[in-house]
Image (cartoon, one colour):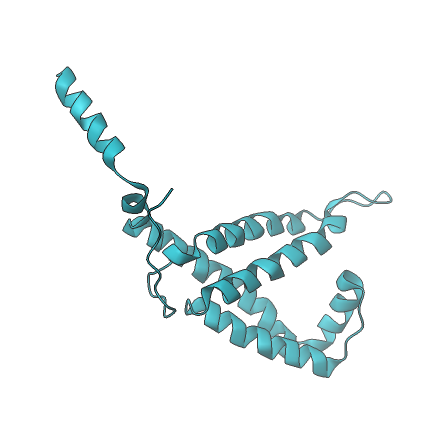
Length: 161
C-alpha cells in the first residue's frame, strides 16, 4: 500500500509545468476570461456610440479632460475594433496589454468614488474594478497559453523555469 502511494506521488511530481500549462482546462479558463472581459468592455464601448453626450461628462468628471462628441464617437469606434481583435485572440501582447491598461486606468480613476469623502457614502459598484483588473492582469500574464479559439499566432509556452 505504501509503495503505491509513494509511486503515485512520484508520478504527480514528475508532471512538468509545461504539462500543467498545456492542460485544456487552462485554455478554457483563459477563453472564459477573454469572453467575459470582452462582454463587459464592449458594452461600455458601444455606449460611446449610442450615448456619446454622456461620455463627454464622464471624461470631464473622471479623467479631467474635455472631449467633444466627435472625439467620443472616434474613441468608441476604435475601442470596438480593438476589443474585437482582443476577443479573437489576435495581437495578444498589444490587445491583452491594452485591455489591461484600460482596466488599470478605470481602477485608478474609480478609487476616489470608493472612498468615503466629505460624509458621502462610498459607491460600492466601483469595487468591481478590482476583480476586472485582476482578471485582465492574469490574462495578460498568461496570454501565450490562451490558445482556445484564438486567431493570433500560437506561441509554444517555454518549459524553462
